[in-house]
Image (cartoon, rainbow over all chains, first blue to last red; front, top):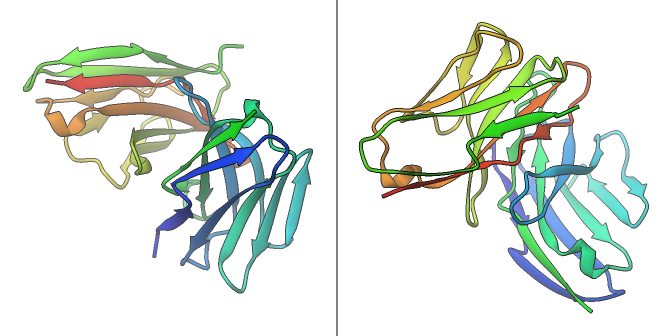
Length: 113
Length: 112
């Protein structure tokens, strides 16, 4: 019940296209859902996050869509660029649980020029 | 402002050796975490701390130990290294007030 399942494992998108990464969770006590971006040889960096009281959050070309009833959330990258090529992790945590993040398995995105 | 600093960046250990991975942060964050990252497995929580003097086990604590004597430092100790501990280790911290982790740049450990 603590798992966060992420798909796909890898994704190839043409420059200018839309990249979509999906995550699903079981524990309805989760109340914080961030996405992290990781470049090779670097630590993950917070990209965007959402709480379950909203269904969508947009920051620039990055959008989180959240479906509370389905217990799913997704990351959409609009107008994908080669510089977006990285590994993306979804995660979830409970505010009452010391802030521990449970991470998805990761998606390696390659944006072809 | 250095953020979260991890040392060393790379290390090769022989089976049975011990070592300490260092993590220090200069943001006065109370919460600190150690994760390991393995290909296709995401990040798994090893240990965490909610403040100086307080530590607790995460999902995969076996073979590791931690201490938190100061707010700034959260070292991870490997005793009797095993090949299964070959991984990339990340330290992270956050404040009480928000949920965004700040990660270090990682330590790549190989046990041979």
